Image 1 (cartoon, rainbow, N blue to C red):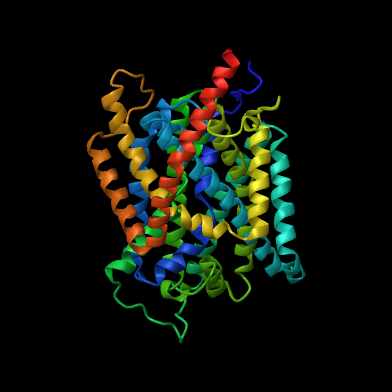
Image 2 (image 1 turned 120 degrees about the vertical axis):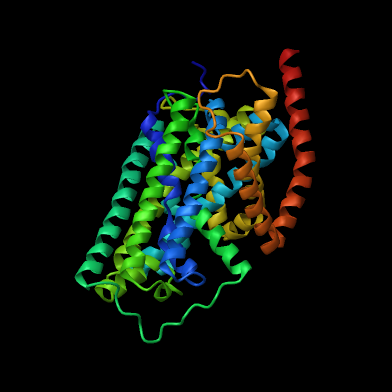
Amino acid sequence: MAANTLQRLLGKGFSIAACVGLVIGLGILRTPGEIATTVSEPVPYMALWICCGLFVLLSLLVVAELIAMTPRSGGIYAMVAHAYGPYPGFLIGWTDWVSSCASISLKAVVLLEYVSILAPSMSAYQTAGAVIVTSCFAFLQLGGARLGAGIQSIASSGFGLIMIGLAIALFYGFLSNGGTVAAPPDLVRVGSPGIAAFGLVVAAVVFTYDGWYAASYFSGEVKSGGRAVAIGSLQGALIVFALYVLLNLAIVLSVPLAALVGHDLALAGALDLVFGAGAGTVIVIAAIFILLAHQNLQYMIASRILYSLSADGLGSRRATSVNDRGTPAGAVIFTWVATSILIVAGKFEFLLNLVAILFMAMYVGLIVGVFRLRRQEPDAERPFRAWGFPATGVICAIGWTAVAVFVAVTNPMSALSGVVLTLISAPVYLWLKRRRHLGGAALQG
């Protein structure tokens, strides 16, 4: 086996764990309060979560064909490069890696902010603490792919138990109180939402389900191959959908939704209303656990993106080194350096806003990519075929295009940044391509 080749060390179960682990994040702890600012009636609120969840599941049923047809690690980069060629892959791949580094940085800082709620003396060490935490998880990766996967499998199981436990607690509160708790006397009533406000709510719910493609980052390392990754992704997404519906049903039964408006962690506000002030502290602890687990998973993801880019000559050759335990060690170190710099510089939120529109384009591209490969590679092996295609593909392409247009209209600076980044990326790609060609010619000489 080549020294710089990722090994097939991961079981099918990790595909499920990766999906559950990336989708479940702070979004489910916060988004109910954001939605309640616009939609505070239980029936439309639940309809939003169910319809958006079904749309994401439908999207995955289409994209699963592309996942199964792309049996190499790298996630979205590998799939886009397969469907459209090296330059679109380069653009999306580097966008994905940079945004992953920014996300790791942001979550390390937010983690320390929540720790400071429990231990106020830590507030003076937030930046240093964030660097220390992220450094620990970066170097933990060097222990091997199986170690990182094992940690993630335990963490994802913990996520599920947290969701179920919170739902049971709220159902118990509902039964103990004889119904929904009384609304606070100073509760502000929510008016009829406008189209823009409703659009923001729909986008917020869809993004809370984001991460359904997580297992594709490890397609070249799952023992059972592409079909197992596709099916594991679907199983993970179904688990998350069931957990989200269960938890939100518990919320709407136990508390008036409008009472959650303004809470940074809406579920903490719900527990405080049901069980009394201070009960919401358990949500802070849950948030810390989730953020810690995300450090592990997102280092695994980011290093696979950079490894795959570099293996194709679109990054540093040093990022292609793989240690004897199956970790792309060089890519991990590069990711750790970039993440630490972003924490110290405090530029992670800027970068995430900068690339937001490119991610919207990416979702549309994944759906359209299935159409493209059906036409260009009609006889290619398809271990998993898109369900209900092409009708489902058309529905999902229209839906994701609508979300992308809405994001572009409501966040024009991100749209402009996406155009600028695309223009800048072209000469960079051509330079890398020329350097790779010259390097290959030198080796042949």
